[in-house]
Image 1 (cartoon, rainbow, N blue to C red):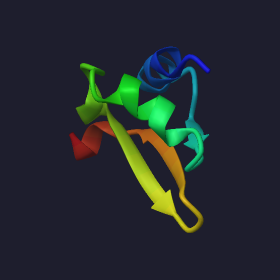
Image 2: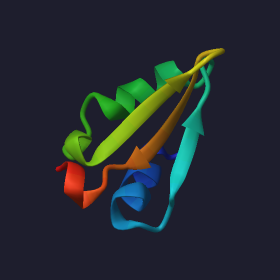
Image 3: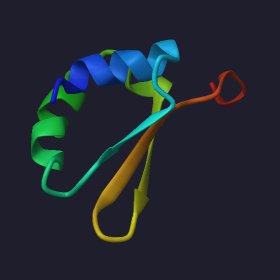
Image 4: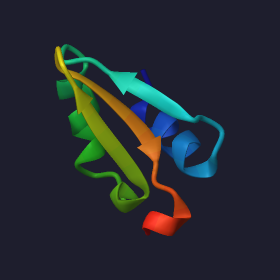
Length: 61
């Protein structure tokens, strides 16, 4: 998966959300740690190691 592209699509509004499983997280994190717009994206952890990423709303920024 191209996580950088998915993060950019979240930020631009092309995607509403995407889900990362615990198995995918190490690969995702290598992209996330260098992503320059981390403050524009919010991750919500759920049971079972699932994280749902969404764009932060403008009101929250």
